[in-house]
Amino acid sequence: MARMHSRKHGKSGSTKPLKKSLPVWLRYKPKEAELLIAKLAKEGKNTSEIGIILRDTYGIPDLKLLFKKKLSKILTEKGETSELPDDLLALIRRSVAIRKHMETNNKDQTAKRGLNLTESKIKRLTKYYKKSGKLASEWKYDPQRAGFFTK
Image (cartoon, rainbow, N blue to C red; front, side, top):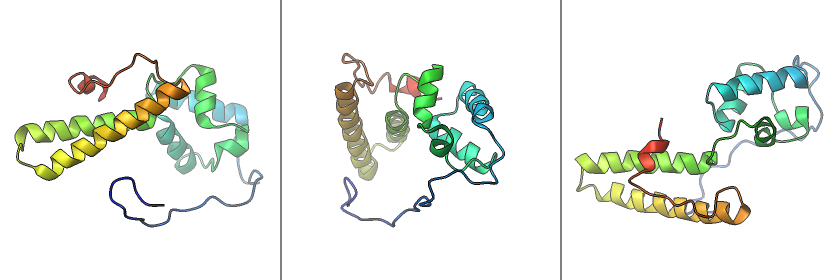
């Protein structure tokens, strides 16, 4: 399937192994992994960062095999989720960075187009999240207040 705005197909990504059982070399039990997840969430890591840290540092290849549910579901049960979904937050941060760039380089037409495309993705995602109930129906993206979401 093609990319959203560029019509390029890109390179294919890696695929997970077909094996649907826990590896025998896994040292962590579900309770220990749950404590690690809680610790990383309290440090302010988002779900993708937590998954990468658990994979690379602690050697936990797949949380879904260990818990039989997704990481976002685990964080929701613990009450550690952020107010905005991770993908929407990343797009908002990108738009803030492009706006900051546009203040000093106001003739950069490529950046202007990138900002337009990014904000259209934000609008499309907010529409989806409002419909699915993950965002409040009165939530609205405001570019002037968007700097609040960046760290």
